[in-house]
Image 1: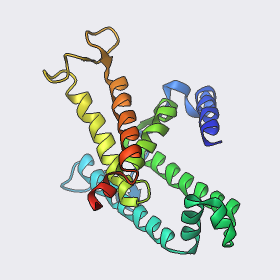
Image 2: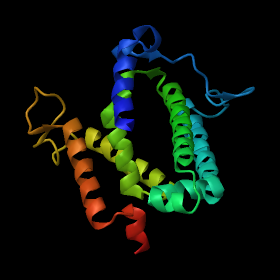
Image 3: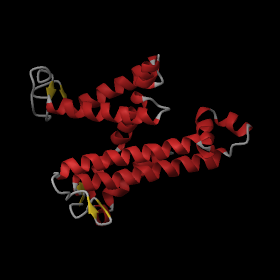
Image 4: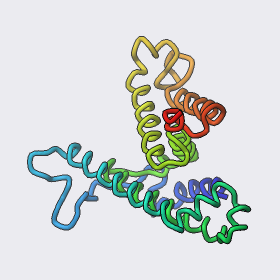
Length: 221
């Protein structure tokens, strides 16, 4: 169902050009990172990148703290029980349907919040940034870091996104240029984008096979 909604949303967001701008996207340069009179883009003595770096990491910490509190309380324990086994959860009195609605609502709200921050940070947004590969990338972050931990999602995001950026920056180096190409017309065996998909797809398979709890589970062992 979620994959179907993703494909449907991807189609609609690209076709409803009056709202989203289609593939060309929308300019978000007018959006400000501000909390009342405090504008995080215009703090004395700091550049925009510096202030946004700390502001965004503060928001990551806040959202992680809120998610951890939800997980520790009764609704969160019900969600975890449904994740581990819907029939067992139902047998002990958990409303499985409602628990699924709650967790999807909470996750969607967090995703929407992140999308707003992303648009403000990039000062531009397009539906192309949120295709099915982006969904697979998010799944890779969770699986690689640790599927049942909030800190695992953060660790996975740093590794996956940082790894992508590193490969892109090193594509012309002597180490990678022999088989990577930045465009389809360049020499090489595989494009940077396809290489990233291959590597993280392989990582997902290896982790699910040998360490289902992700890198944090490996660290614990």
